Amino acid sequence: MQRPAPAKRPSAELGMPLRPATLADARAIFELLRQAPSTAQWSESQVLEILASPPSDRLFLVIEERGTLQAFLAASSVADECELENVVVAQDFKRHGLGARLMDALLDHAVAAKISSIFLEVRASNSPARRLYEKFGFEVASRRPQYYRNPSEDAVLYRLQLRESAS
Image (cartoon, rainbow, N blue to C red; front, side):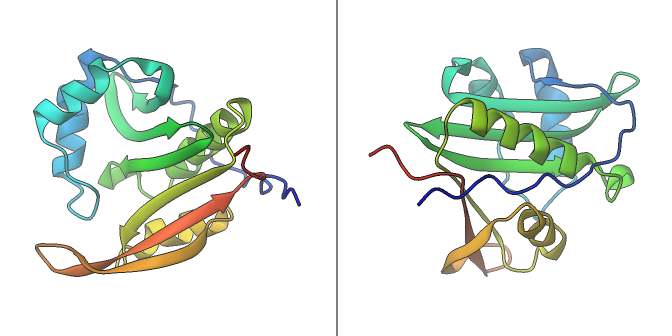
């Protein structure tokens, strides 16, 4: 049985451009990561490697205002599954709808790419992120006890089933 994609949540239209990330964005992305300790932390070399990889299996989007990156989303796909790897919004722009705009773009991408499901993991204590994911229809699939370090914390794994898998 196919389940339709969840209805999109209206997101704030701040006029900030949403565009694919480029190698030129690497330093700003790394700086956003440093300001968001509850998200997956990548080194500057990891960010560069991700941005340099072929875009066919990766979605990496940024939102900027007046030339300053305010948010980004990174996801990768294998076959008909997608993993949401990271979403970061600058502290001054939290609760302005940027996370929702990025999630809308991810869902648009997933539907166009015929993705059957999207997975992600998040710190159990990251309530704002968990609320965002749940508003978009993600459901808890499982937990990984003490998965994160500094501090030690469970990871909550979420899944959004968009359609039946082709396999």
